[in-house]
Length: 147
Image 1 (cartoon, one colour):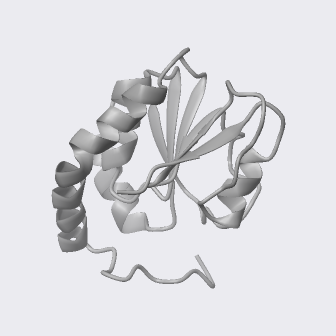
Image 2: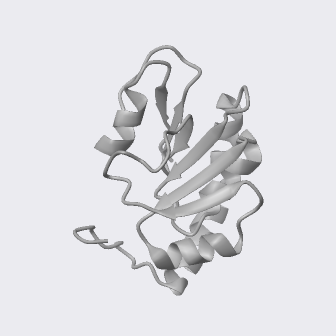
């Protein structure tokens, strides 16, 4: 995708393996965070900047949305993610710094951010401007979790 900044550590298969180690290290705290805010089953959960799909799988497991969408700019990471996708999970190539997204999210995550539709007012968005825009509409609220 033209004009998109490269990943700091690359987007190769070895980089995907490195991210698997990172995902493993942060899985307990990420799971606890998601479980703390989990409520009614969302129709759609979107992982913005899903990389090789580790957080996407966790979102799908904990939130149990009807559908889960992973968005990333890296064809290599998406290929790795698609190899482990479960039923109901779709991965699409998209630069998450641009809107509109391929689908309008009901719940979304972006590594350190979760966007929900069950609270009435938005809060300060800590994700990218595009991710923030999905949260500025009525009945969406962005929750930021920093490790």
